[in-house]
Image (cartoon, rainbow, N blue to C red; front, top):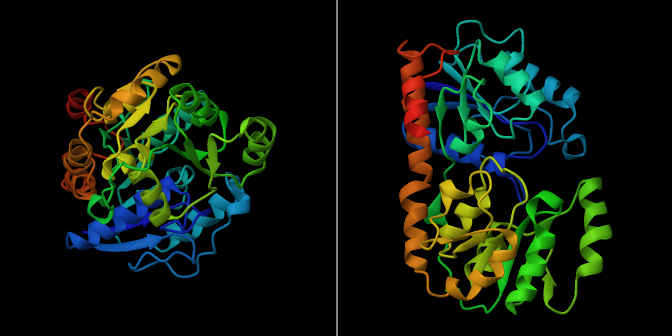
Length: 353
């Protein structure tokens, strides 16, 4: 197949530090090529993913994150270069609604964010002419009126992640500086458990900076080691040596990529059973899920969990190869006319749910 793959305009692919969607796009691009397919990738011009890319794209526009005008300009250029592909997989919000996309080329889009009432309106419209992928059963179940074609969990290149020893004598937190990610809760949990906490956070946007300055910074004390935003090598080292990874999210996160990264290092996850977490963590085997006030009590139990079992879970259920194969199977059905774009594969969705 000749696959057109469209990422967003704001972060390079792969990302240097933070960027979950961009990691997924990079894994898919590399995986499709490894499987013998041609890929044309539309991403910011300062991306380094080594597959053929659409020329004339702009550099990453992180300062314009979330702005419609930068996304619309980006997808206009992207679709203008996609006339000769067999199928387009679009990871933007605006792209599948673009009026001048190639008329005979099937379009698939992935829902990366929460299905808010506004997003439901958008994806209901998208679903009339494109196949829609949800990234977790929880995400899909929150808006049954959205015509989801298939549920495909994220995956990653597990083999590239070193397995840590878990002997660092600390807990760790990696995420954005915002209330939803549960950093404040992680600080409290670590203190209640009597364990040091190492903190790596993305803090670039004004709201992230304000939250850290106003809420988190006044809380920091001798029990916390703030290491800032880290690259992959530093992140895997940090997480791999931790006794456990704290993920006390306070929102229904559609898919917590950082959880499978923790499992890949062999580190169990302690978090809240919200959003996709129960689809990723097996309670009592690869981590523990409970109410925020229960989580400190699981810390010592985490020492008894098998780090090998955590790694194997990442390899068996959340590998890049599995994710790539799931997408290719869907693309093949669409191109064979077995599943017209815009018509949900009801049986498969119910199997996944």
